[in-house]
Image (tube, rainbow, N blue to C red; front, top):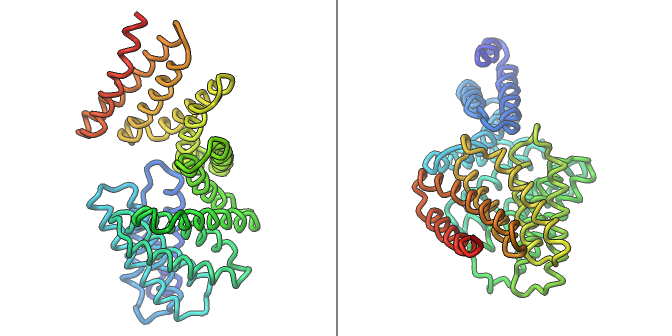
Length: 382
């Protein structure tokens, strides 16, 4: 029916046909971004139909726009595909984004050109993560830098400035991940922090909660990681974790569960981890509070990534919940300690069952080791 609506215009207005294909695909795509079970394949089919029916010598702004949207759809399908399919989607998305950049460069639409550059940068970044490839990571950094410079020159592109800075920060971290840490001495991570802070600032200027929320998640992760550095003193680490906590909380407010379930879960996952770490180092008056909040956030993630729709992620959350109870048991006595150890064991048992079903030997062995550690003190209490 969607295809029929668009093809209706083909005999007398090809541009209207292409616009109809793109508008319908956009609605499907945006709905998918807010769904636990997106139907991106519908948007993909519509845009592929548009490419096949629109003449290659037609208006570059129209053809480039189709390629740009198709690259977005293909890239978003990666998260919902197995490894082989994901690689194929990445290759196709990269090809479409390159065609979009090349085609749109023949127009005066700077917004569309920079948007396509950001899409290309995102595809290169995903490919770099997929292959752990330094060269592709460097290419992603270069593309995001170019997009950022273009956005800085034009106040109308401030919204794209936030996107380009988010991508630049992520690309810098990917370069850091695949190169020797001694080679850059923390410079790449420092540049990434600056990029994410610039994304927060840029999105604040245009009141865009989505870009702002993504930047806060990225910043929170980096601050939490910095707090675990061996060079970080106790006072500095504590403050960095507090900053990370505020960033994740801000992101949760930007992504309501009913509208953005995946980013909501992502923000809660980061928040839970840093709250747990903060609780481990907190004094006896505060650790209860941080552990309780961590439990809440881990449970929030487990509700979004349920056992039915995401068994691996759910099982990982069960183990994290078990870790919180297990560590809490180490700091209390009597019946409370016994209760916490039993809870911890039950959570690890639940995770172990799923890992066995998924034949994930590494995580299965980790669960078995943790269960042995937990059962020893429980036997001493009985």
